[in-house]
Image 1 (cartoon, rainbow, N blue to C red):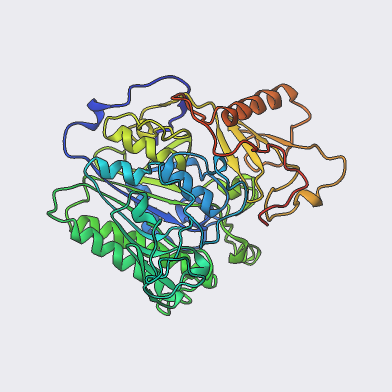
Image 2: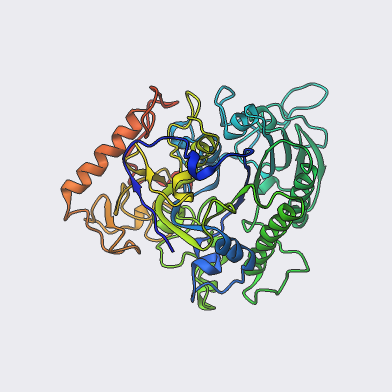
Length: 483
C-alpha cells in the first residue's frame, strides 16, 4: 500500500494525464454522525468489534486516509466547513452548535460546493441532516413559528444554499420533523428516519439514470448519533448493545448506496466518500463498549467534543474505480473543508473567488501523488471553542485539558499545569507526553502560524479575505462554553 504526504509547494490544478478525458464524475458523500474512527472495523483491527462489512469493502476497493480530520469535534461547524471550504469559527459561531429556528449560518452570498457544482451542470441533492439553522415560517402569515407544523415554509434552507433537492431534517432534537424541498411535509418517529434516508437516496440515484447530467449527492445521515434507535431488524445484531446495532444498520446503508450506483450504471464514474462529522459520542456508552472489547477511538485519546484527536480524527474512505488504487492508503493530513477545492480540481478549475479560504485539493493523493499546498497547517476546534494547530508531526493545543467532555476538563486540570499542550504525533499518537514546556520554539512557531491563519481570514494563498467577526479569542482556558 502506498502512503502519500502533503508538501507545501504550488501545483497545477488539473491532473489531466491521470484523470483522462470523459464526462465529469458523480460525487457521493456519505457523512455519518458521531461515528468514531475505531467504529469501522478495518480501521481498528483487533479492537473494533462492530461488523462493518460494507465500509470495509469500500476501503478494499479504494483509499483510506489515516490522518483525516473534521473541521470541528462537533456537528454544526464541521458541516459548515464541508459545504463552504471555510472554518466555521470564522463566523459568529465560536463554540457549540446551532439549535434551529434562526437564520441560516451560511450567509446567502457565500457559495457552497452544491451551488458551485450546480453552476457546472450538476444535479445536486442533500438527503439527511442539515444542522446549519433555518427558519420555519407560517405558510399564511410568512412569519416565524415557534413550532414545526406540517406546511411550514423554510426560506433559507438547503434549496437557498445551492441544492436542487432536499429531503431530511434539521438536527437530532427535531428529527421527527420531515422536510422536503422548502417545507415541512410530515412528522414521523425517529426510528424511521434512517430507513427513510436510505430509501430516498436510492430513489435519487435511480432517478439520475439516463439523465445525462452528473450529480452530487450529499448524504449526511443522522446515525449513529442519538437518538440511538436501530429498527427491530437490527436489534441484537452486534452483541454490543443498541449503539453497535445502529452502527451496523448505518453500515448497511453504505452497502445499499454502493449497490444502487452499480445497478444504475454509475459505478465506474463516481467518487464515493465515506466519513463522519466528528468522533464517537459518550452517549454510545464508550466505557461499556470498551469493557466488551470495542474501542471507539482506536489508539486515540478523547472522543466527540474534545480537542484531542479522538474528537476530530475521522474515518475517511474514498473509492473511484479506475482512478483510486484499490486497497491503498494516504497518510496526508486532510480536513473535510478540503472537499470543495477537490471538487473544483476534479473539474480542472480553481475554486471561485471568495470561496474555499481553508480548502486544499486532495485530488493528487487520490491519484497517488503528493498534495502540494500553500496551507501550513490544519486548525482543530473543540465544542468549547478551544483551538489546536497541526503542522507536520506537531500538534499545539491551546487548552490545559480536553477542551470538551472528557476528563480532565479545563477546570479539572491541576494547578501549575502548562497552559497549553504540545505533542509529537509521530512518536506520541495517543497524546500522552505533553512537551509544551520542553520545546518553546516549536510552540512559538505553531502559534504564530495559527495567529496568521486567523488574522488573514484564510489559511491558503488567495484573494484577501476577512472573518465575519473581529473578536476571535485564541486562548479560552477556564471557559466551558458549549458544554
